[in-house]
Amino acid sequence: MASAEVAAVTVRDFARRVVLKTALDVKLQPAPEPLRDDDPGVAEHLLAPGRPAHLSIKPGAKIKVPPIAGMADPAQRVRILHALANHELQAAELFAWALLAFPAAPASFRQGLLRILDDEQRHTRMYIARVRAHGVRFGAYRVSGYFWGKIPSIKTPLAFICAMSLTFENANLDHTLAYAQAARDAGDAKSAAVIERVHRDEITHVAFGWQWLERLRGACSAWDAYRQNLTWPLRPAKALGPGFDRPSRRAAGLEETFIEQLAASRGC
Image 1 (spheres, rainbow, N blue to C red):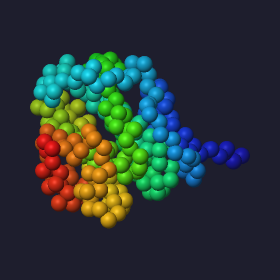
Image 2: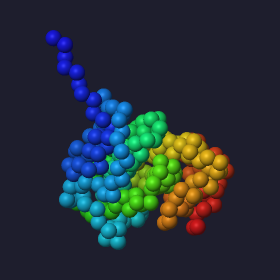
Image 3: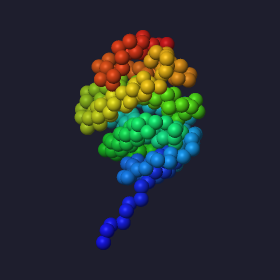
Image 4: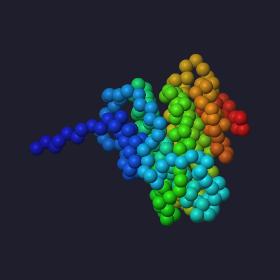
């Protein structure tokens, strides 16, 4: 007897699950196969994610995360890893958000969002595992919604990739290198390996943003299109971490002029 045909889940249903479900294991479950995107539906601009009570978003002023020097102390390191896990959880939610917000975007753009969403879910799971390895439950500390706070100003796919891919993830090229080195210096090779894996994936995410900036920028230069599609307080300076890693940005395909303009924006 022939096996029953598996019904395809839609990209829309999967994206709504990632954004709105409160159960963490459901939010972080990879996309099922097959996944259908032939009827993306109407645009849906959600303003907040579903979260379990212990991971509800708190005002940023109430969130205290140790500086990078805290990686040397296991009690502070776990708080840093906890914050990094929440950053990745927000990223997963927001790439799912973009699938709902931009149903008319090109199919290749939406497939790219799905690939990055899968990475962000995996990053979250990896960081949660490191938090647990330090004897702490994910959700033991308050978490912010910094990325979510920028969503009301994002109205187009170009604005989304300028904020997420070319600002937040661009800055993470620097942050991940610094945190990985700090973890390794502290003797935590397993956390360092996780952060280094995130760094490698971020290069491909920045590359996605750059490729679509080039396709969508029109007659503007890449730099002008990037700046024009950021809403304050987002600005090029926010795309820099504690250092400035040119090799990773070159690996992501950013043109040299753009890299130098970005480097010159520190402090602006």
